[in-house]
Length: 242
Image 1 (cartoon, rainbow, N blue to C red):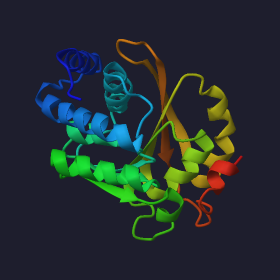
Image 2: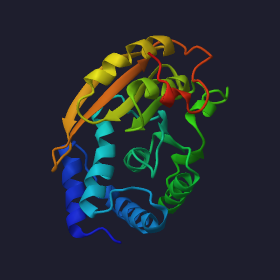
Image 3: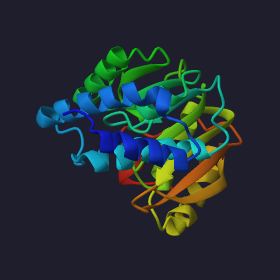
Image 4: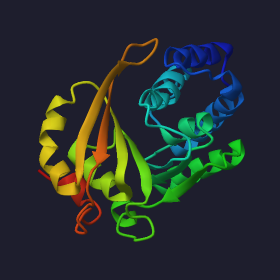
């Protein structure tokens, strides 16, 4: 399935509302759309299948991360639980001078992301198969990233345990959430204290065109994460820190 002229218009307009000029990147987004819709017929990568949904709820939604001014050239970023490549792949297209590692525990999704990276010739991105809990216990990766991203992965306390151990002191985590995050934020305070992070800012916004409410929660890494975190795979989600 190819992106229509209406899809391109929605993408350009949505990005423009975020202060972005996507005109130079439209060929890559159109090819990404084609690869995603084709693969989704057999791999079930995303429940969103219509053009407007993919353009706005995947592509534009991913690009809302760039509202946060901390995304500067030269960063090393890990996208934890990237799924079919969101938000990491749209960001990698638009920010070629930022390096993105796209991590997921589902092999078919990582395989798809790797194919997109190769097809779009994104030299600033690579796909990683594995779990954040395991990766963060490897000295070669622990506390090495400038930033981590998550998109609708888990509760904020779980997100903090999966991401903060991977981020260097002084770095940040950007968690993409829907509306009504106040309870999550309150419940995560104990976890943040244990893990060496604080909530720096919460940015509230609405998705262009459809108006869906979103929140970007920015965590700042202020101290090293104790070596016992993250706990074993699966534990942070089943038993979030309090």
